[in-house]
Image (cartoon, rainbow, N blue to C red):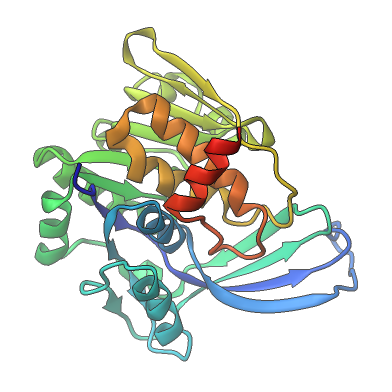
Length: 288
């Protein structure tokens, strides 16, 4: 079976990561014990995860004209992602300020930067969406761009997977184009049962408890992840979403199991770009 062709329409950021014994309360200063920088952004993370999981991936997004841009592009290229349509906008690239405590929990503040420049897909970007088997998007880009991409995908028979994070009210035009919604428990509660019911397949991640899938015709699936020692949960949801997209053509049950394994393995490494390879997922599933 040939590798699925996935177009990711999403964000790309430079992550500025601090580590500390615990996350600070509002107004509190906590002494940390580490600092690092590295490529991130939900779109880039999911594109890299999908490529490592075996898909043929093209990325649609934007970097700035700052010192971060070359490193952000190189991270995608290094994972085998096609960046031929990656835009360069004036001004800074997107950044995410991430704090991680000793238990692996995190808090994140994202500043859009160049991501905000991608308000309307170009003809070339729309062509990449139409040519793909699957479009994977999130909500760290302007909603108008996500909606336009999903609408074009639906018109051209491209499956649409949406990870609505950060959670927001989703316009009817966008919801009508979504085939698969990937949410965590908080996002599911924020969107509400009525919104979730409009989507053929809803995948809900449950952290260390795995994930569930509610599909058309009453289909109900649940998968549990392999046991791991958690180092950092940053990027685990993106590893899950990217692997789910790359595995969707294998069937819902297999895709869910592989995504759960990928999400768990991602927590064993520090940083957002922690998605495992296809071989690592195979090995983890073999040990269960």
